[in-house]
Image 1 (cartoon, rainbow, N blue to C red):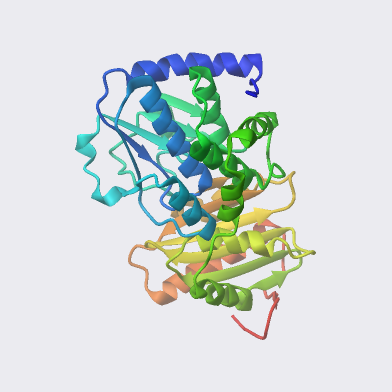
Image 2 (image 1 turned 90 degrees about the horizontal axis):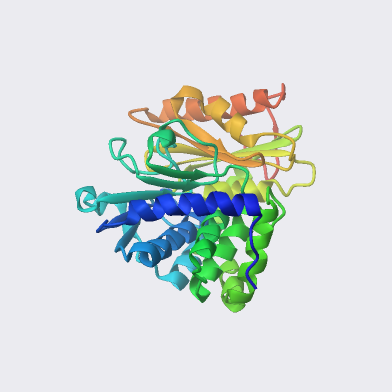
Length: 353
């Protein structure tokens, strides 16, 4: 059974849909850009935009990103959907007369669309950024738990019922970004979940959650725990150089499960950047604000109340300068939380930083 959004939001979506349909009219090729290291919400939202483009304008679409799909669950989702993802570095942007961006925005630092290629369309559930205001079409709903929820409302307005693979992707995106509707989910996310559940492949949802991992995953996890230190009510760790940037967020999530921990920070180096993930279990705080504050003008940061991330280009920094940058970020994170003792205690083993 289709669960309708509220009348006010339905009217807003319908009006925007008219504008989107006008933008699709007569276009020949659509490029859909995701985050560099796309999570389930990025992947599902991209698939939904492609379905909309096919339904409204029969436009050929290409989905691209600039990094890797590293987390086991995300790889399992991609294997199930087989969306034919392309590397953005291999794309000739001149071949596309329309560019859409999902679950990210221009200037965020977590996508690889060149600065001189402003997208025409942006769907996102993060804070509206200044550059995004210059795009022809935007639907930014920072109060929504997932971008997938926004796109489902558009599919509903067109009368498109998601097929089983798309429904499975959309519901997994909502579950992932809201931690099974327990983190920053609103009524719209719950309605979307209820609508999608009968349409989704339940066996595949279970298989995706149990995605297999290589042996190197456990070595990386062991290193993260050995380097993790506890500071009053926060835990911080660093992964060093890694091939799988998704591991940074995964470790930050894992460390937050420690019973006396309210905040976590995990950093790591990949794709020429220092990447960081922040998590908190305090829903009255603002992890995104803290991410922006500790990154400051050295890079970009953002996210939501309880989870956020950031990236700082390493440019030509040598190893010592990178280590100093990591220490600066950790100390600024702790000081922002009001923690004065910056020595900390190891949470596992006898490793010393």
